[in-house]
Image 1 (cartoon, rainbow, N blue to C red):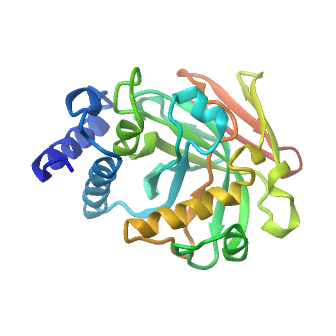
Image 2 (image 1 turned 135 degrees about the vertical axis):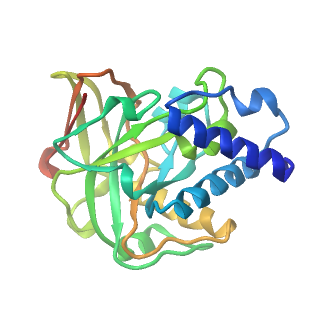
Image 3 (image 1 turned 90 degrees about the horizontal axis):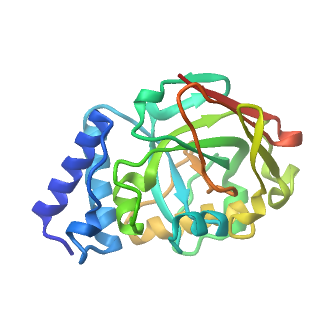
Length: 261
């Protein structure tokens, strides 16, 4: 692994980039020997400092679970990051564009847990039993690391490129809908940019949550009751600019909207 002082220095750089809305040079350009475990160590140190500053962990995000996202990023395995309380908005919100270094939108389902989930042998059925409800969501991607040439090591260290979460639509119990066939149409400024179905996430978005519980077990962690889990995007990311309005139509599950100003 990278030396601890190097991990700490990189976590500091990312925290500074978050405060300044800046972008830093790729970690892998400077430390090509860095591993996935190094990147989770950097993310974990950044998270612990954020929590020490009074921010609160309310959930996790899973990334790169669909072929669409893997092809869009050139990264071939899932990753995860944390969701903090000051990064969550309700549908219809106006979100400050200047809160981010760059803005892309992804189409996802969010699982809200009624009971804890823990690996190492978590299954889709365990996820469905533990879930209170599933609801439409949009993830705001935000990268503090230069995008060109980045690898999964860069992405994970940067909290899996998580920027924010917009929740909305009609919450449903997981037994009341075939999650694989939840579809969505994403509009930017009244033009359809992306469409997809949730089965694009590992065949079933609940599989993403099971993957997360098992991966967290490897890092000595688990999922708590009440956490919101973003299961992964089933469309490619859509770039947004200041003034853009986003609407995602999930059919019977309703809409999620957000505007960037």
